[in-house]
Image (cartoon, rainbow, N blue to C red; front, top):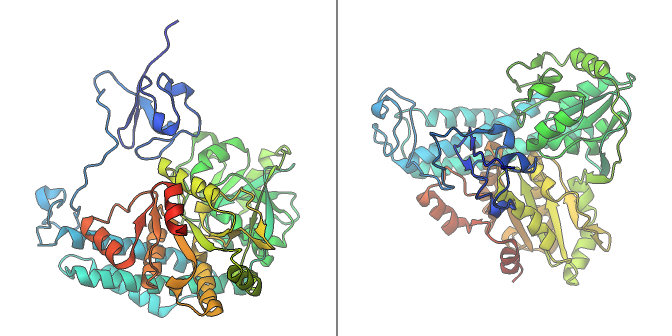
Length: 500
């Protein structure tokens, strides 16, 4: 019998999977057919799943190498653009590549700020100073307005401060509306009955859905960044908020196809749906998907009707239990014990390991990093980066949990508040704390948070899974020289370097 050695091409980045070569770096032996690749296998170049591959025709057989030819810049926002397609070496207007990249960086940061501001406004909270900064920043990136690289660095740092202010605003909105989070155990898996799974970040949308489903016999589940909702008293009071299905945002095609429930996407991190669940998916708020019904004015009647029409999920073993909901008050209530343990040498270091998770193979680093940490360390985490390790049982150090989930990505402000409180507890400066930040990034909100941490002058952070594409050599050199920002490397080597 002849075994098919058909090659497959990634339709996103042109990477070619060759069965004869396999993908040894990611555990796929040579001779493995594409059809036999694990369902969770991802393109080693761009990180998409198997569903984004197509059989390769004979005439196109040259595989794309896993390196990228970096453009100096790319700008096509005015009619002068080179060749009518885009300036890639230097702007026709005179704009230098580093300026173009810093403009892009600023746009990414203010997109992140806008996301947090949007969710705060959903709950009736706004800030005129942040609004004015967004106007100034957008204007500064227009053609022939600002070509000063130094000023764009200043604007990026100002964006960091504005993002801190915005995250504080959103945290205030969440706490004043739903109460301060409390540690809560969340089972992962289905229970008997009709269901709705909610993904995204909008606690307001989740609250409205919970109100409208109360007493209807429908179980509501969270997915991805909605997990921390279970910790808020104003949301956990709804007994039909029963648990979690799936993990990070990029597992949704697999998770949503597996469970025949209605699906509600409330913000970013929604993916183009598979046909097999497209007709039972809905969006709300800012989220929109082609061919998917959008819910207006938080009237979730169509979602409820679809959930009832689909019928019961079958009970499944809930072997994994995740713990979330560690607010600043909960963590700081342990301050006297933390001080005692640190001074006794029983806690040597704190790590903030988190951020946006990425499907890139390099993101496995974060799992290995946390696995290999010494037993006398404590891990704070937040955002969907926690799914790399939040099912681990790290135990505790005399009552202080070794794994503390602070919440959504905007809850980076909780980590900042805790760090500031620890400086007062130990009488040291922020960079003198036994604390190291190991960041993962995926999209624009992570850019906003990075600049918030840089605006606080936090030194010697680690970042991955890759260096941001907007950062050319000049920008990287500035971040390294001024802030000690370090790309992740080998987990064990990085730990040894940090722990000394």
